[in-house]
Length: 444
Ligand SMILES: Nc1nc2c(ncn2[C@@H]2O[C@H](COP(=O)(O)OP(=O)(O)OP(=O)(O)O)[C@@H](O)[C@H]2O)c(=O)[nH]1
Image 1 (cartoon, protein in one colour):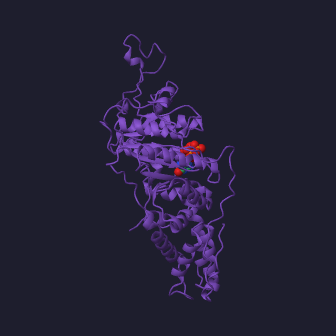
Image 2 (cartoon, rainbow, N blue to C red):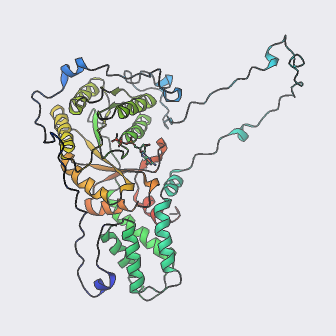
Image 3 (spheres, rainbow, N blue to C red):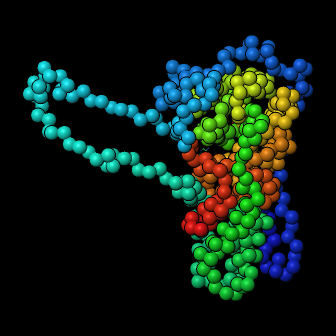
């Protein structure tokens, strides 16, 4: 918890709440040679780069695990219009069903069971298909509530502990406010929720269930304005999405999951492996490209990311891609040199298409809690964030941070992630999130 708030009692007696402030960003540590680089003139891009670069189109490598290879029906999807794609989308993480055939001795008429010293096979039994069916995949609501269990149970435990057979007095409200701030909901939201709960109920009994309903209602009100879908403008071809964020936030994985969604909508997708810092990130993106049937423009580690982004745009335009997703290296928001490199990527992309990037998505790892506030602030300055994706809500009790972000920045939240699987990222909806955080059932 990094926020201070005025006590409920002092507010009752009229003391003004201090305006909450975001935690001060860590001091900037300039990198060696970390001053913003001047725009290369001409930009580091174009035919020179292409000539030096290895092939721009990825294919399944012999080293790629079998289950990651592009299914035959998607091979060459980078070159051809998308056809025959399952409109519901295929889950690339699930291996294709295999047909296992057992060549039993009965297939060799010259060998009998007696020759093998085995008993005569029993007459074949017909197994009803239903018995071998796998269990249905859990719904998104199920995954969301399971994923957010740590956040919701810590809140729920506090509410139940506070409001079981207790009158609503100033001390209880004060404790509730503290619990809400501890859950990273932010001071203004915590104060609003407490006031909504106390309104007309002071000195009366209130059940934990009632408190949870009011809590969910207030959280929903805060989140509603930011719960906006990511709309791909089809008049922009390609629609360029720049993915940014700190190391390990989940950018590359989110690109893979989003690509899968776009592909299942019949969009032609191209990926640019702009995280040129980590060889593993380049490989990771290639694997995703193969899985979803999207060409990946990748170069060797250490290549200039801005030049690569420029060339990817050129390539995506030439091959008629609907969407181009550009990965970038993870960078700490307080490293000036790396943030300058991000600004350069944006400048170079704009040189090619002044309206691009059409979406700049900041991927935030929920487990960082309050640090997400300074990430938004500084990435916003460097690259102009248009939307947020919050990942790893499943690994933390700090999911309330999304509410604090909505309250403070009002930047659209497009998607949330509650696991590593491709189905664990879904569009953000205020009501579901509010109910999940309050530990309520998904009724109404
Ligand atoms: N539990 C959980 N793990 C996630 C989620 N999203 C991503 N991850 C995992 O987080 C780890 C880091 O993800 P990456 O996609 O490599 O992160 P990145 O931001 O590209 O990392 P850098 O390349 O270092 O900048 C991977 O192991 C992902 O599987 C999520 O919603 N929940």
